[in-house]
Image (cartoon, rainbow, N blue to C red):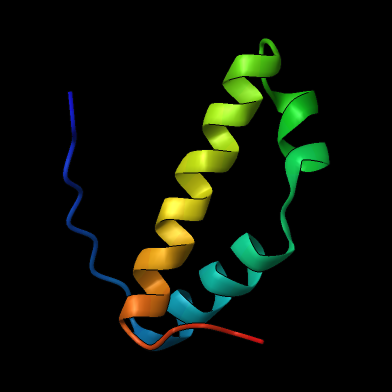
Length: 61
């Protein structure tokens, strides 16, 4: 199953979210996840979101 999400952010929010996603890693997700698989799924979803922001020109270095 695939879920499509439409999200409207102002430019400042988009850049802030992109910065967060750039900096967050597995070690940030793992303590918040119920298990290893959930942490991996969290990271994969965040990576997809980061890529979507980059496609819109919101890609911090």
